[in-house]
Length: 576
Ligand SMILES: [Zn+2]
Image (tube, rainbow, N blue to C red; front, side, top):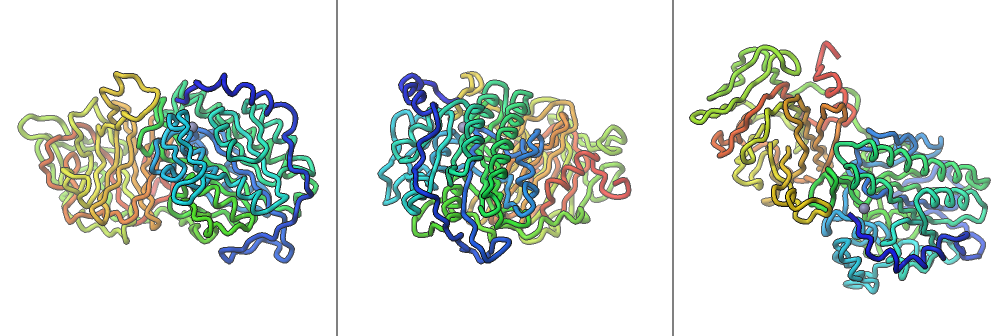
């Protein structure tokens, strides 16, 4: 939760800044040749169009809201359908900076400066309030916003910073640029008006606060109607500003970069914790260089926004030594391979006794009532807790670390400890090779703002995914709340770009997703998979619950493919 402590101190500035138009540097707009750094060329070739940029930061907007909420204008940017000659490079697996809490201030400053906390000095909102911003720079990296850098590198270029959170005034000492500081809706109106004029600014950074307020008040996850309404409002405002841009008489001679991202996501009513629920953000770039729409490989982060915007104006960002990197067309995936769901490398339907499923202890097949036909029930037993060994799964034909696994799980209530639902690793250490879908893994709320003392004490158990990585590493993605007594869909995928995505098909009908970098992950351990146990079959905490339709694929399925499987309740073949 953002503090309101310095609101009064800054109210005078608010009045000054919010009135009238910002005084923009008065020189005529220069026509700057567009950099062609990665070998891509602009459509239409020949004539260099005048570069322009709009960088939008949506405070607290989870990446999965973009596809589950009412955000048609942002989705059109992503799908490359905003204007016929504009494409997109997009990622719904973007990330916050990794050396700061998943709070606003560190990431707002990273978006503005292209630096991470070690260089801009702000690791939390509290650091901001205590004035720890290192404007002068650390290790020769001044925490200067891209707007300031652009104005210096391209004299005559007109920048504008638009925001509604007083905390962003802290960027002002650095910003020798005009700014608008007002409520979100007023900013949107004002910005649309400014951008429709011939003498509009060339480079705009626009921070919108509303989704964060709705998330804190009513929940980021599961989706609250207020949070969804905030996303819809934001989308409408962005739409009005995009319309203003497209209405410019000089628009055909201009080359706009539209960048939409967020500072963090959220879970329940919080963010701040080191969890993919708060890490995962959208990172969407629309521009003429990005035809057709392609997905950005890897994890673009908040600190990549500034260098990406500067590179659009032809600034040599390599020389600046920023922590972030410019997202170029060369860092996009060529195709999404959504040509069809590939054949599984293994499928366990639990409809009938099967030699490839060895039941142990209090485990049994139940012939009806599963997601599709029968299911596997793992009951509790003091002497012989249930589990099922899947012989042969130690040799699943995954390709070079790429895989998908999906499973449906129903739990009767809270679990004891952190039992594996599905695992092929020695879960005594998350560093071990192999993977585990774990029930009741507690998220560390100690650094989370806004939760109660009781919540902090008890933690927040939920479903999470762990995988071992090369070099004695690990990646943990989670946690999801597990609705009790209902079938819930889970899928984990890892693509050639090393991004691990964890999906939850919730009984509320939404397919949620979160993600993180898991490059160098080691999916197979040499041990077979167990259901209800880890790869050793002897983990100290045993899972209790029901499992159905476990499927492994040799590559990362796309979100749309998983959505199809979730919605159809795993219609894999004839019924699809
Ligand atoms: Zn925020």
